[in-house]
Amino acid sequence: MKKLRTGIIGCGNIFPMHAYSIQALENGVLTAVCDINHARAEKAAEKFGCKVFYDYKQLIDSGEIDIVHICTPHYLHKEMSVYALEKGLHVICEKPMAIDRKDGEEIFKAAQRSKGRMSVIFQNRYNPGSVFAKQAIKSGKLGRVLGGKIIVTWCRTQDYYNQDAWRGTLDQEGGGVIINQSIHSFDLARWLIDKPLLSVDASIANRMHPAIAVEDEACGILHFEDGIDVQFFTTNNFTMDDSVSVVLHMEKGVIRITGDEAVIEYATGEKEYKNVDNEPQIDFGTGVKGYWGVSHYKQIYHVYKAFIAGEPDDTLEEGFRTNNMICAIYENARAKL
Ligand SMILES: NC(=O)c1ccc[n+]([C@@H]2O[C@H](COP(=O)([O-])OP(=O)(O)OC[C@H]3O[C@@H](n4cnc5c(N)ncnc54)[C@H](O)[C@@H]3O)[C@@H](O)[C@H]2O)c1
Image (tube, rainbow, N blue to C red; front, side, top):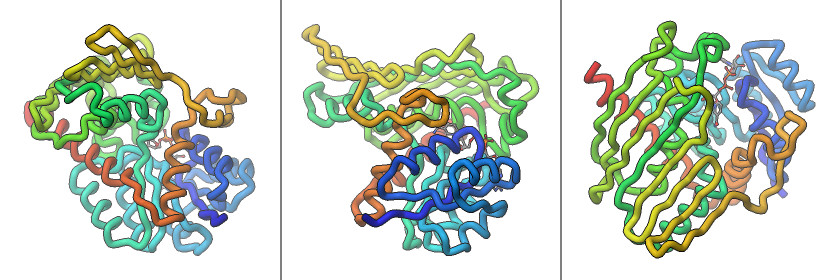
């Protein structure tokens, strides 16, 4: 079986989800890691028995990898993705695709020109509840989507923002609770509805984090084609990370996604429920199998398979649509500040 030789740029928090996923793949092999933080890069290289680089361009130019995973702060996604695509490599980039509309468009155009292909990570589309909800909508058994709501009530203290210099900054993180935490739920709702976003009415505020430059709370309405309105409320000021919730109301019932799970309640009173699938559980370095879920593994597996076989994969286009939606929310909200 053909294996893609993989390099990962960025050995921080999200690195294990990528490294252990690749280790579990039959069609990929982790060949090199890269970080400007030498100690982090060396620790990761030693753990995964691979080469170490400290400069991402040297890694991409090395000729030793076919695909690069970008796990760095948001503002670096554009320069790293474009550089790799111009050198003909495949790219998997962590969310968000970019920190503004222009950078997203530049990446998208570079991917269209490249002989490499690209995917943007939104692993929650692969959760059992998300897949179940998507299939139910596609089957037509619930009729049309009429509207919905997104609730993300999480907790991020100042200690979280103090971890790394890029967090809480407009130029490097690109925003706050919208672009970093609730982006997954925005993506999920948009992907399930699968209609163009027509306009947005949004408000953002910083209520409880005076030391950061970005929003810690946001609310508003997304107006999709066909009169589908989705209300949202998202905050980093809650007492704890509550389960995120995406609810769609439809002609013949309601879909409630809470965390990984989905419940479909029909107008008849009948209910269907999905919270597990048959995918293998992976220990992402915590000593507990399945602790982190396996959805990073699933997206990476599907993308590698498609890239190797030249099969279709829409995770770049879907990531680009979400990037444009997030930018539309910020554009509308910032104009009111
Ligand atoms: N999909 C998810 O659920 C999920 C969860 C967490 C983070 N993320 C995303 O993953 C990305 C990274 O987040 P994180 O929490 O791991 O951040 P982090 O700060 O923990 O790690 C980033 C790493 O990038 C390195 N780095 C910075 N500049 C670099 C450069 N020029 N060259 C090479 N390395 C460089 C840093 O030294 C650091 O080790 C972000 O886009 C974030 O939004 C996604």
